[in-house]
Amino acid sequence: MTLELEALATNGAPHWTSDSLIARDHEVVSPAIYRYTDIAFARGEGVFLYDFEGRRYYDMAAGIATMNVGHCHPRVVKAIADQAQTLIHAAAHVGYMAPYVEMAETLRSLMPPPLNAGKVLLVNSGSEAVETALKLARVATKRSTVLAFIDGFHGRPMGALAATGSNSGYRRHLAGLLAGVEHVPYPNCSRCAFGHGPRTPQTCCGQWKAFIQLTLEKLVHPDDLAAILVEPIAGEGGYIVPPDDFLPTLREICDRTGALLTVDEVQTGLGRTGRWFAFEHSGIVPDIVALGKAIGGGLPLGGIVARAEIMNRWWPGAHGSTFGGNPIACRAGLETIAILREEQLLENAVRVGHRLMQGFEAARASLPMIGEMRGKGLMIAVDLVDEHNQPLSAERVKQVIKALAKHGVVMTKCGPSALRLAPALILTERQADEVVDLVTEALRTL
Ligand SMILES: Cc1ncc(COP(=O)(O)O)c(C=O)c1O
Image (tube, rainbow, N blue to C red):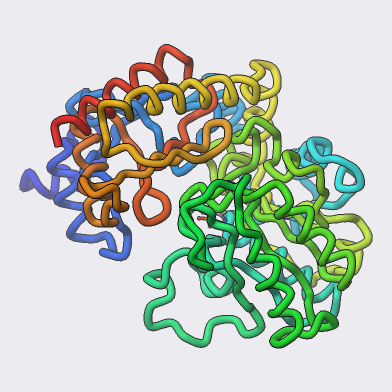
């Protein structure tokens, strides 16, 4: 057997090297997948990832904001193993499963009234949750149009993509996606669509309100508006924190028009911003909440929670999914939620997020490449600027991220020019300091 075939046959970790894995990946995996780093991940533990040569990396991407209690938390590992020995899959369409019901009960219990008496439908991903939410909103209202936002991200499959407005590259050559989705500008005070930036959410020009008003006068009749779909903090779009009156204004428009306020908490949810859900910072309650990422504890799980009278407008067979609410994913998610609660990790997210912000703020004095910082809790964007204080190009930010990996820190990008920090909520203040040191050291060498 040739060495190559032997490696293929064994398929086991001991035979891998980072180089061999990457070479084989390039042979068989679609180039559609963009990689922020050239690291081959052998294993993960807590806030760290390791490659096949044993190099250790601070993981500030956390599986793209999914691993909220860190990699391979022993309790999550045990929950997965126990469930795998009991029931791997049976399908919600075929009968009833305890982990599905417990997950539904737990998710709604984390929400304020009336959603805490709402109903839940579980699927497999964030995009699928968004599409489920849009489908429900259209069926429940018998209306056709959805208002979404420029700078918003809701996923890449064709339905969710129709609502995504953060980057025209995602929609390239795909004109004519789902009909009936209209976009208005998200209140992005760093790069104001109305030419008033850069400002802060506190000094926002407020023109986004007039734009929505205009849209409802000229383009979308309020009687046709099924839903407003919105992220409470625009994630992929750049960790854009909107002004305080943003969600309350959307709530008011929905109350006035009969549309359903549909909040995408796929990235912001499950404690990342210091509350279970980021909409809680604004005091409003949505009609439908889309969830994904962290709720599966690292396994594929998404879902929606909706007011009961809305969900009850669906009839048996109206929606579903073969694997949605898979028992192992539900158990991993339930254990994750228990750990977040018992170890007070929402409070930790606020404390350590503050520490990271302070660290980068202090570094900025001697590192002019660090621009604006945005975010809440452990959802932090650090904008990078050039010598003329202009945003670094997306290409240069990607190069910076590759360089950071060589200094032992893994992260991704958000918006056109920001480093995205979305680590596990177990990150300690000492580790946050070390991350700031590693990142600033790397930036100084560039
Ligand atoms: C806010 C938001 N919605 C939806 C999605 C899509 O989730 P998924 O990639 O699990 O389909 C994402 C993914 O990044 C997201 O950030």
